Image (cartoon, rainbow, N blue to C red; front, side, top):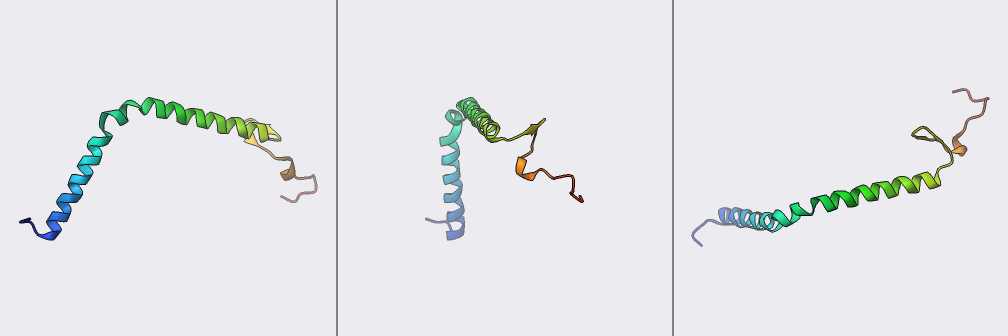
Length: 75
């Protein structure tokens, strides 16, 4: 090519980025709702697993029985 090596490398990198952007185009955007729904479901599953393992919930705070302090605590 007639371009110097640095400019040729920049051009090739730009073309590669353009190609990947075009490849991700509308089809990637169309399934955004499905990906958000799947992420929401994963979060709900994680919350359900945490609730099943929980010993004691005080509102939205998990308090495990092994961390309960007795009345002789100085803190």
